[in-house]
Length: 393
Image (cartoon, rainbow, N blue to C red):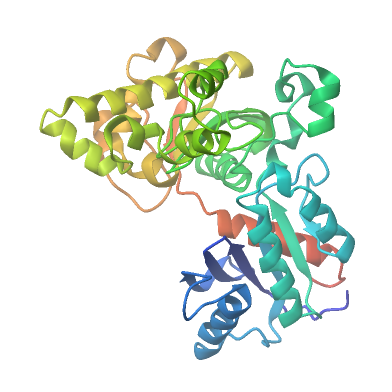
């Protein structure tokens, strides 16, 4: 690649099946120049991803930030599943794209749309480096004994059945941001990261390296989520098929779309659940208690995995905004060195902050995640390495 050092901008694209989210960032300081979302892709005015990205281009051009800008260094794409093949940000070529398409069976709801977004972006700017950043990549450092399921090895290898983990860009960003907040090097910290949004996952990060995570082959495993069950006895699936007469697709929809918080109480918005709890709603209280109980189990388990925990971070929508979830999750865990200051915890803030007591052995933090900045950073680092005379952020 032969690019000018003046090319400091990265366009981040997250192409979903029915939407395209975008952010344009200036990597000299990480500032956000533009952001938006094109929704209802496949309907009416936005019949396909080509039309969606044309709209993105138009919105950027209207702000003087068009795709033809000479300051644009690369496009960074969120790709959900990289399997075992892709464990680092990767420059997209025809061969790479073909390999990503082969991973569609592992992420049938996400990778096809990711691939489509890449293909369209490449046609719009074929001269521009396009980089894939994988949700699974940060977790590729897990030791084999953590990534393996205890099933027949040949069968597992034939069908790619293992723990991959997701939300990797968030866990990577937050684990470093915690270190910055504490004024320490990430390599000196053992951190538990709790990414609690509508989708939720936990990770154990030792010295900046992921050693365990809660999501598995798919994003269904692990914590209780907005609409996903999280951990479940696999035999429940057989039971629903044999006794309930449910099809595979019906069970899939049940566990992914009609379970978790919404399955327990009919709401997947923690704010609404909190309101209902305040009115004495027993279903909302049970949903909250199940959610928090699962979190506490993982905090305890990951404390054992790490051996020593220096920091615990809450992030994403629920993690950043629900003081009640944070307090309930760590209530009574002083024996693990975790104590929340109720006053600090109740305060709201826009940046990273500590909410632990002065005597807490573990630093407890609330850290806003920034997956787009992480994707842009990884993208820019990769393309900068390919061209001399460009300083990395």
